[in-house]
Length: 360
Image (cartoon, rainbow, N blue to C red; front, side, top):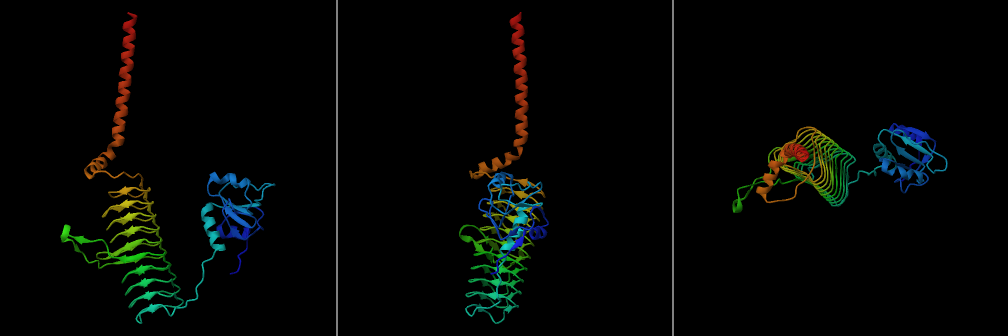
């Protein structure tokens, strides 16, 4: 692989930044601010790391607005001033670590049904299975152990990591990335009756994933009971997330590790669910809502809301009482504070009255 070399000025043009110092410095690598040395570029995304500038040996540092000028006696020779250092860092990291290119070969150890359609430049590794009437788009890569069920459609330029299962008739858009162990289209959790009379409800819908979605390792997206479970364009889902049947996740949403979304819930565009958030079934979470870690969502959330706070497990009747009282706490607190002020005024009047009696 050819080693990438870029001048700082070239990198500035790539990320729309401004060089402070020597733009002709040659950059060979990207490194952390603690470990960077000559030839490296690093980034300063948070003020708490600013002290590292005094000792950093990096050739250049990506910084936000108001870059400190390079000073003599420091190894840092120049700064790359940008609006968002973290985004610039990500773009430059891609320059020095380009994605591996594959040759489009199909392994003799893969099993591909004769009715499947494999378009140009698809790379199929050993022990991949592609079912009847499945279709794989141009430039897609299927790593070892991938299972594509009957009638599955995978778009162009997707990257499917080892041991991913995509069940029958599910559909992926273009440039979708599925990490190891992802399961798309397992049966939704649906049963009728109670006790010994539980009857499995056939899950006859599908999962549809739109363009530019990335799903982390061992995450599951269940197929719909009827219709479809839908993950819209640009959404990013972390490892170990559960998306239940008939859920709709909007565009550009972020769902972090170990979150769980119950059936038929609708999540809006650009929503953020932090780690271990739990969402009950049949609720709506509005566009751009943000839910903090370990929060339970028992009801619909309006657009733009910012919610946080979990609750310890308790006997269910007690939990219901707590949840009923919780929204009243601000009013109760205001009432208590008002009573405290009244008692304080009464006490002051009483003390004044005692002093007057004493003077008599």
